[in-house]
Image 1: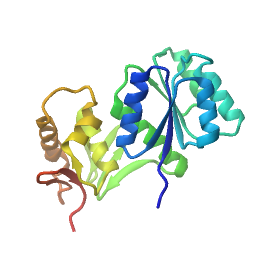
Image 2: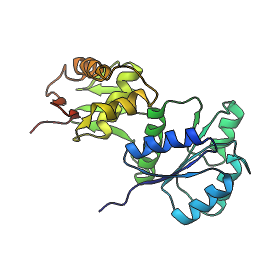
Image 3: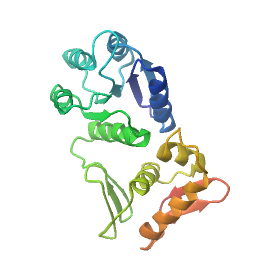
Image 4: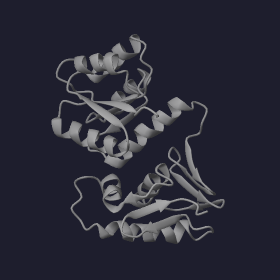
Amino acid sequence: MTPPVRVVVVDDEENIAFLVASALRLAGMEPAIAASGSEAVRMAREIRPDAMVLDIMLPDYDGFEVLRRLRDRGHTFPVVFLTARGDSRDRVRGLRDGGDDYVVKPFDVAELVARVELRLKRTENPTDDVRLRVADLELDMDQHTVYRAGHQLHLSPTEFKLLYVLLVNAGRVLPRQQLLDQVWSYGFDGEPAIVDTYISYLRKKIDAYEPALIHTVRGVGFTLKVLE
């Protein structure tokens, strides 16, 4: 049995830490929360995580110092900064010091999870281009492009997020509520029917080519796969 992917979430804002951990858990990972820099370094030593989501502004020492201590101790797992500090100098410093990505608050939950998953895949397959493919459908997170049957498809940001979640979970049936949580985030208070609306939008673009890839499982949700 494959062990779960362990991710340490480092943030002293309890609501942010809970939100990020919940999103990672929903994506199939096993999160742990640290509220300070010293706790983050200790958990890295004890848990040996696969990745870390790291705030910069912490109550003891900052995220840059956390990253330095991690790298000095030989930890090579990907670190994604999640911080309110959006100045370009901070971005450059975070990446130059050994960070793998930099996300600025306020943030989109689905995008953060996608970035963590992307860094994890690059760790597993350093030479892989990390494109997601099913049949002749291809999504490239770095270039933010989608191709089907060799044709580039132009998707809205929400359509792109929805397709990403379906591709990451290709072959699995995803309930509407799970799609709602991952694509529209936990604070969304609109109607669940919006999922069906955007699935319809995606079908008009994705399934304009054969074979159809997006399928409805009545009473459950949706799946993306090639029917045998």
